[in-house]
Amino acid sequence: MSRINLLQTYGPLIEWDWISENFVEDILPALQGHIFLSAVSVAIALAISLPLGILAARYRTAYAPVTFVTGLLYTIPSLAMFGILITVPGIGIGPRAVIVALVAYSLLVLIRNVVAGLDAVPPETIDAAKGMGLTPAQILFGVELPLALPVIVAGIRIATVTIIGIATIGAYISGGGLGKMIFDGINRGFPTMIITGAVLATALAIVADVSLLAVERRLRPWARTRRA
Image 1 (cartoon, rainbow, N blue to C red):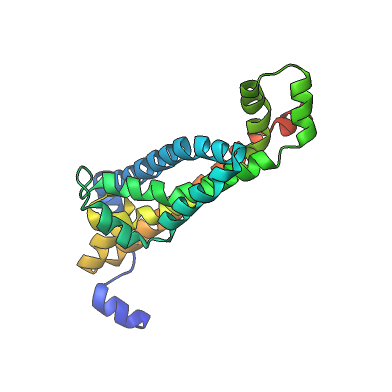
Image 2 (cartoon, rainbow, N blue to C red):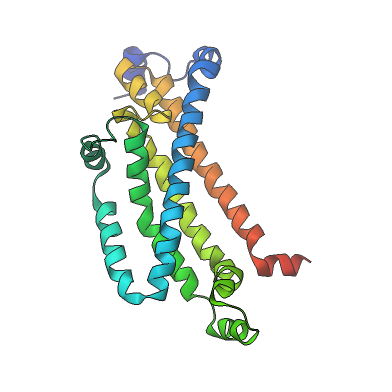
């Protein structure tokens, strides 16, 4: 469809008056809802994947079944996942189903990156820590995880961007967020709502990715030492 036909069918692509009039009542709550869905999903996924990743790194027999199950969850199409979850008692239609789905999609990449980060820690560093008399817990939290942080944060970045994108589809089952603006705009034939929701979702993903990259660089122990 040409631009002329689009204008004839839907009107102007961007109506700035509508954006200014509805920013506080419609646009800002949608953005806040999207941030809430994404942040909660990333936090829950990280809380699950970090201990599972440590377990898989310590006991290799657990790595295959853990990645198999999480990989199976990752292969389920998003709409199919939402359709399954809304039939589960206690979940139903709404943000809860969206958060469960987003967590499921994040586990594979997070667990893999936790394992890869721990595997990348030089063995001589661990031997030196043992020689200093550190306990296994002290070595894990004081040596291995800080050194594995760049790889772990890289996984968090990928998971976060993925979650922000998939969360837009969650509006199909009343999950809220910016996806609601996009679906409402499609149903009403109102391009301004569609473009506003899509642009804000894209901008949110970019900001999250850049912010996590900055955090990763700041938290690297060797980077702090070099700056000092």
